[in-house]
Each structure stands twice: as structure tokens, then as C-alpha cells.
Length: 285
Length: 258
Image (cartoon, rainbow over all chains, first blue to last red):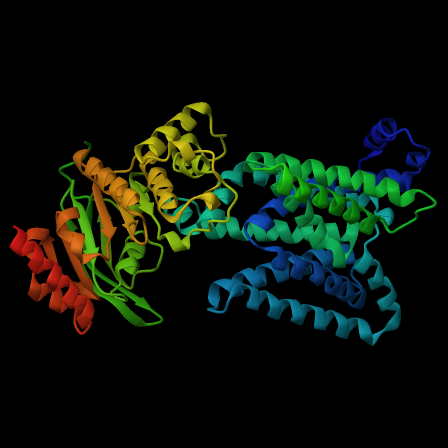
């Protein structure tokens, strides 16, 4: 596997703190710096397309994915994204085939997946302990291999966004109109759902199953309060997400604070949201 | 005026079914170029379904649709569409100008940014529908009529030759209705063909020069003057008496007026 040392050295140089000399801190920061902008960009579309519940269902499938991996003796690194993709596509497919409301279908899959996860985990107690890590997230234990996975996803995602951004805007506004104008709506919806599933799954590493939706929607929601246009919203969400990730990581390591990193990151972005809401109320249009 | 001689829309034996229940039967229709075609019929007559089937948004059970003598997939860029207002997500965070610029995507290229040249095109279209002052407003902050005009402007920048509009007059204010009808006249003058799903029978003779009267089948089609008659209205609207009475009343009024 190629080395990531150069990037770590650059990070240590950019943030010349004592704790940034520790290698797991460097990895954690790099992981967050990759996950944060991905979550922010996908989060904007999740907010605009009203897919927060979908993202939440995928997040919870991570828990089941881990349980499955531990039971089958396969690394959760593989079972988690695979199961996340499976659930994402299953929901998308069912939404097309069924006349039920979208959130009803997601609710059905959500409960089915979580019930399955709990059933699997309850069968043996030592698995239960491992699964707990994924409920709260643990970015500090991220490995170089994980980083490479995330790096790959990062490039695929931004290439997709570069080519598909206009089309996604169009079909978010009105999918029929987009279809008439020659956008292959179902293709883009499926690719989007697949990428979203993967981003959600990798974000679970950072903040855990319980808070993964927050990582997606809080930066986007704050950005929407600050922004006057969709272009501004895009950049504000990325900035808010990255700043929250860096501050959250650093604050959580201060010895007198010593909180879970994921929760701290989400708390920082929540403060952003409060500021943005006040801004929108008193200073915005 | 390109291809004025070629028939903009020809439908042959079109049948459409939902869950194996037919909703449109054996539709045969040819539209003359450069005309404003009104599609009228009672609720559930299949008016929107017809447009969706023409645009291949829903599968056809049988039949053929040709636009300018070709399959739809080959002439997509020449076909514009204005959807029903209720089908649009009005909370979507885009400005009126953004929406109109989307009509240019096909010409700009899908992964380019909207440059100032295209923003100018979009602004001109907004001006045509009297919405230039609202260019930077979020669409959620516009009234129903204003939203409708923005979507009309979006269709205009596409510079299509054949337009389909699904109830553009539904629930709009008088200013918007006037703006839309002016645009329709301009499009007609430019040799374009526009299909409009329409509800208000009182304005049919005023707005459209060609009519497709629909109730699962084509009840009547032809120049408005010839087909907008009592017997056809009775056949189209069948048992829905109140609506029919209003229509007949309107017709009589028009008859006595001229």
C-alpha cells in the first residue's frame, strides 16, 4: 500500500500543536477532512431532496452491516458498505415499485434492518461490545486502509458531482421536467443513492450511527440560513463542515474536556446552526 | 421557422393503460404546424396522461408518436414542457433566474457553469413574461402566478418548436393569464406549435385555434370554430351536468355576442 506520510507531515506542519505529532491524531484529522466535505455536499442534496430519513435508515444499516460481518467472519470494512448499498438500493427499488409513500417504505426497511441487527447481536454478547463502537463512532481508531477507501470514495464523489451537479439540481426541482429535457432521471437517482449510502456508511466511522444524519444535514441547514443562492449554499456547507470537524477534533482532545470526537464535531456544527438561525432571523433577507 | 411543412406531432393508435386498465384508447391525432391546440375534457379524461405518454414519461401499451416525423428521442431538444404547478417542489432553494437558466442546460452543456451570456438569455426570457424584477427571488417567495410565469420563461429559453403545457392557467391571477396568452400568441407567430391542457371552457374559443376534445378517446378534433359545439361537449363531458351546463351557457353567450 502506498504511504500517506507526506499528507500527515503536511497536516502536522499546518497544525503545529503538540498532539498533532501523534500518528492516530494525524490519521483522524485526515479522515475527518475527507469525510466532512463529502458529508456536506451530499447533505445539501439530502436537505434539498428531503432525504434525511433515507440517510438515517442507511446509517442504521451500518450497525447491522457490522453485526453481519462479525457473525460471518468477514471484516466489517467490507460488510458495512456492502450492506449499506444493498439497503439503499432496496429502498430505491421498492419506492419505484410501490404505491406507498416514500417515508413509509423507508420506515419499513429501517425497522426491518435494525431488528435484524439487534437479533444478530443479541445472540452473542462479545459482538455486542464491538457494535457499540459503531453506535458512537470512533475516528481515532481509523486505519490507513480506511483512509484509502475514503480517499477513493472522495474522488468518485467529486467527479460525479462535477458531472451531475446541474442535473441533480434539475431533478430535485422537478424530475418530470428533467426527464423531458433528456436527463436520465432514474440513473442519476440510483447513482446518487448509492454514493449517499457509501458516504453515510463511512461517516459512521466519524460520528457513529446515532449522529450520522447530523453530520449530513446540520452544515447544509446552517448554510441554507446564511446563503442567498444555491452556489453560496454549496461552499458555506463545505466550510462549516470542515471547520466543525477540525474544531471538534481539537476540542475533544483537550485533556480537561476529553469528550467523544464525533459528538463534539456535531456539537460544534450545531453551534454554527444556532448562529445561522439568528443571522437568518435578524440579518438575512 | 424551421420545418413548418413537417407535421409537428402525429399520434397513431395510441393506447395507454394503468395497471392493465386502459385510460386512453386508440388516440389518433395530427396537429397542424404553428397552431395553439387546446386539450379539453373532464377530470380523468386522460389529458395529462396523453402528454406524459407522448413524452414517454409513462409506457405506451401500443401506438406510435412522431414529432417532426421522427421519434421523440431524436428531437428532444426541440420539445419544451411546462409541468403542472403542483408537481414542482417550490421549497427547492433556487432563484427564479436559476430555474430559467435550467432551460439552457441543454445548450450550455450539462457540466458547465451558467455564464453571463446565458444569464442574459434567461433575463430576457424573464422580461418577456414580466418577471425580470423578481429574477433573484427564491421561487418559494413568489406567488402562484409568478411561479407559473417563471416556468414559462424556462420553457421559452429552451427555444423549442413544440411545447406541451399542463394546465398553465390553473389558479393564476389575471396578470399571469394575460402574460401567458401573449406568449402563446408570440409562439404561434414564430411558427411554433403549443399544446395546452385547459379547464376553463369559457375561454376556449378565445385562446385556441385548434381543439382536441378528449374523454379516454378522441371525441372530436379540428379547428375550434368547427368542433366546439354542443353535441361534442355533451359527448365529451357526458354525465357531468353542472360543468356541461356552464359550458353550454358560455357557448350560447358567445353565440349571441357574435
